[in-house]
Amino acid sequence: MRGTIDMAPFARSLIGFDRVMDQLEMLAESEPSDHYPPYNIERIGDDRYRIVLAVAGFDDNELSIAVEANQLTVSGRKAESDDKAILYRGIAHRPFVRRFSLADFVVVKDARMANGLLTIELERQLPEAMKPRRIHINVLTPSARDTKQAA
Image 1 (spheres, one colour):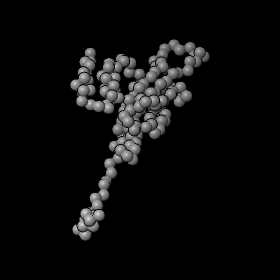
Image 2 (cartoon, helix red, strand yellow):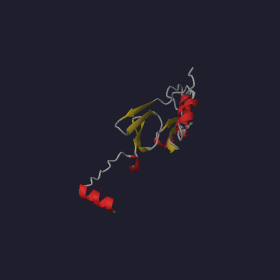
Image 3 (cartoon, one colour):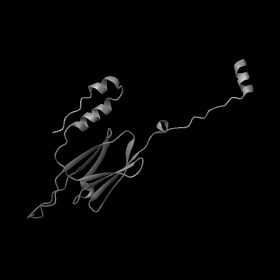
Image 4 (cartoon, rainbow, N blue to C red):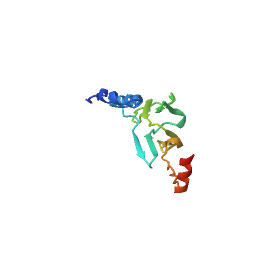
């Protein structure tokens, strides 16, 4: 059993972090016990990530990927075919929904499927205003300083 985190002490002193607090509380809630389909999350660069889901048996038209309000949702629903008499079902084809919380400025760059693996490429794209920038320092010569003070 997972304990909950009391966010009240933090909420008293942090202003404008409501969304972060909500996300932390959501992550602290217990996860459903369903671990289907299995997946990996990889960091492939400073600002690049990859999610790989094992979706063997699903076609690309049976999968859906959506991003809304910093949440990536991957879902799958296998089309039912009545033409086969299955004697034993060992390959899971049950419907699923997998959700991933994305940080600000993380966008989905690509999604592809090969060999039963769905690969989703993500990248953090900071706006120019948020990137570090170098500020030029103007040096005034003594004669320029005297001219500025006289004005």
